[in-house]
Image 1 (cartoon, rainbow, N blue to C red):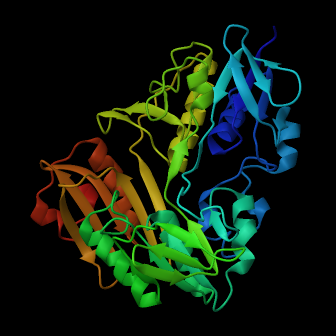
Image 2 (tube, rainbow, N blue to C red; image 1 turned 180 degrees about the vertical axis):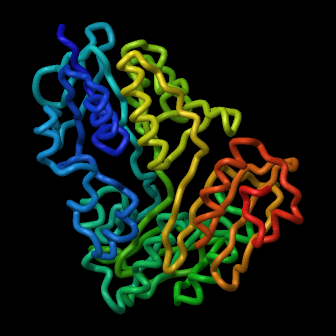
Length: 402
């Protein structure tokens, strides 16, 4: 069989793997199989600028549609893979003949975690993961519309920021005692809660949704003894990694498809990249599954390098971002409950950084409108720096000088 790479998943990890293969000089066939009707695109704008109507679908495309034809990259859109036959080295589709592969990349991403309470299937209850998801409800975010957001994570708060600007009456229901509870310190949570409330968002914590009600479409959200009126509901309670194809094929799965730091599975002909993987990271000193664009792109590139016989380990410090109102939050590293937090700058002025120390070691930074701290913190985290907390708290001192 001539060299043929099949990539399952048309998101950013899959798209990057295809692009990198051509950039590295791979001349064999490359086929990207995706279940959406779009070329690979960037997902972060979905809950920000695309939801706000500020950018078009085409602006989110990683490359124009014509580019893939120019590079002889085949895109099979609206196509579902049903099975991987490792013995025959082929991929079975819901329709059509199996596709043979010499190398296979699993970039299957994740799917939204869904509510399973009464009324969860009512019209008007929406999720946000794809372009089509946003198009299904964006035009309903009009002045006076009662929007209820279930989940106070980044997606929920980003949607709240867009919707309140459009004049919606926004309520956020978070079952934890704090918004962003899993990812930031209480000080940061309180800061974002105060910002949203000042903008007019009704944030309710320790609010577990028990049902949705309505005649023909959602009209009410039930939280214990409380009833919240709703014209539209958007649920953002996380994603579930798509690992079923890998598991059914006998590949190791543990909160993601298990790969090494070069995106390789235990099968020498199969690689995996993006939100669906559980991978080692020497910077944080363990294995983890990351839902982030930088990781998806880095692993997509790593898979291509490994296929080309030139493995390049992914060693980057994890980083993320979130845009809400005039706040650009840029995050490096991974914090944990119990870490010591040191604030640099002014929360009141919306220009500060939250730096996290674990047993004295600089492990994470969450910078709000402090781009220099964000950029410089990566090196401190990678070097396992032990800064003096008093000097760290002084914003007149650059992080790189610590």
